[in-house]
Length: 246
Image 1 (tube, rainbow, N blue to C red):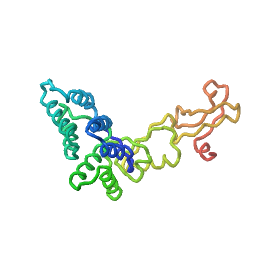
Image 2 (cartoon, one colour):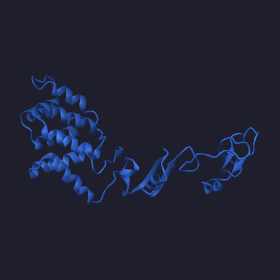
Image 3 (cartoon, rainbow, N blue to C red):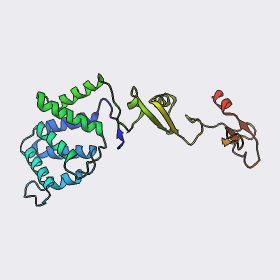
Image 4 (cartoon, rainbow, N blue to C red):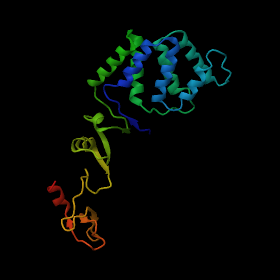
């Protein structure tokens, strides 16, 4: 199963492509659609570029899928129609390649298709339809895909079965949001045995920087002077004392 990103509820990229399409002439429409598609789907950009370059002549490639794509492109070059744009999107996603393309930005792509459908069904401009789609999401239950990668600010208020947190210097506010996303499991990957990590103190005996150590017998972690292993200094500090002194 692929991993997907979560989009912000106010998606600038969605409104940007909507404004471009609303203001596009027949000459720029295909270019804008191909540019947007390459942001969302893998593997289709080169095929689209090859076909679009051959619109003025006969496309000699014998592959039926490319001939179908050429026909969809020609229809749009003659008339800007939201239904035809949606048909093109569905074809690029489901039929063009032998293997379905990976959706790099699944929410952006799906919201775009929803807006296109609303545009031709209700006769809205595409930018207005995008606003209505995103506004509806504010009042609907937000659902996280089976696997996703995101920033804490975009996941706030959402919940999943398992959360994986990568140590990237999160502050306490973002750390709290990150660890409360998982309802059943929480996994933290960090070089430090304590997280969120903080700058380690200096040794009170020799003023060298302290580092994390592990007791060979008890396997418990503690803070020891960086000279601890060389027996030059035996300065140490318990984890409890370290956090109480923060």
